[in-house]
Length: 495
Image (cartoon, rainbow, N blue to C red; front, top):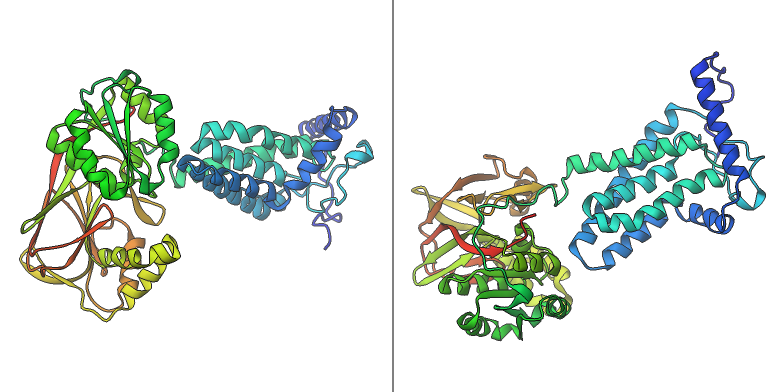
């Protein structure tokens, strides 16, 4: 490999401002070289090497993800995405645009020098850009984790001057480019803080000092023990009941009889059961996410114990819509989604194998089995016309695009059902994928989307699988889906 600095290019003519700037840059470089930082000779060269090819930042992202909190995982992903954009920009534009040679190493003590000197051009610093991109990306999603990562990123940037491989201006330019890359990623994919649902319509909620009056039922099957302990520490006056999955419904009914506020800790299916009880008894609901996906809690803006406790003690909450479905004698509610067709079949198949091979492998196997099955699509009469359908989805509120697929709701009280239909026909997998990539387009050859307040489906065969909030049951014929506007009061922090 040869250096990418072309020494045959003629030097530029005299320019007073540029000459003064470069002179200052060289003097700053020599001042750093002459200064001894306690511990720097031993730590900074190693830290600089550890950041080669982004290894340090991939390790940091793995550590963040291992914390098992949703915000930390999102921060890790955003940090790596920002690093990727910064590296691409530096390597395709930055290094090629300003072909500046590396500093002369004479003023730098031998103990500080890297064993393997870089041979690319000096401006801007790729290590500084990657460090700033990762740290800024993490901080935009989680300021607390960003504060933890920032000193390491700053040390990596400083090490590039301290070891003699970059001028100070190279590092400053790299930091600016890295931070800019993180903000560019945020412009493409907003952070969850930017997409926090509006705190409306506000509801009058009892403020529970120390959690007095709260009865929280936790589903042990969701692995909620750690969060329950944190809740007990934060709200010592709250009553917490840990129940096996089969006993959750009965415990919720008992809790509603003596609770001022009904609480639930579990996944979306457990939260659905608690919402049904809260509606019947006219109680406000406190939701602590404790499952795998926790769509309702996260869309509501409650991610952890701290957020819920703040809302409970301040008496902060909102009214949210509830979806309701009926089919013969069958009736129920949904807080997130309702669906017919392929998805309920996929859930049923996944449950058959998940206890043997795990959730994700079971999901992949279920998708293959369902999409390869030689069965006719669901048939239903919609708007007076019978149509073959692969999937009918109704969301409780409008779902918005997060990346390639619809993923988040920004308003839980918009009074609308977000209905998506994937038309029947050949190649169901291709149709479903094209519908997912198209997102919330009104029309396409593969799917249609509409926002309504009520939906009636005639001609649905009894026994057709139906899914709501991750639970699966069977229809008893025609299906009606409607909204109950602002029917449920739920705690959430308003600031």
